[in-house]
Image (cartoon, rainbow, N blue to C red; front, side, top):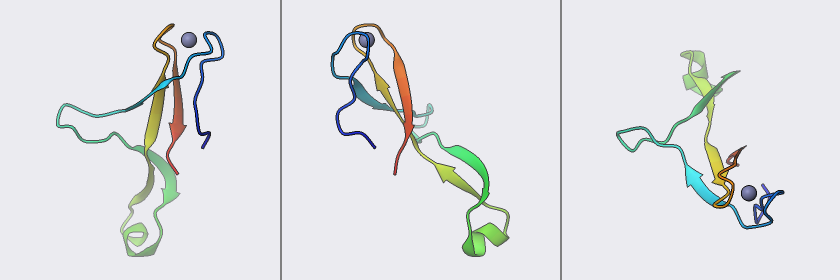
Length: 67
Ligand SMILES: [Zn+2]
């Protein structure tokens, strides 16, 4: 993942934010890949955690997946 996220338009630093639902649970992206191991055998899919970067100037959002 890139270190400092900058807006290409405004050249200001983007603010890091996380997606949460109303119960403060992080939102996951579910892939079609099996999680592997015993949970994978039970049909569990691999999940990715998205991080979003918001530009405070133009309100643009960039999404990345956490390592
Ligand atoms: Zn911007």
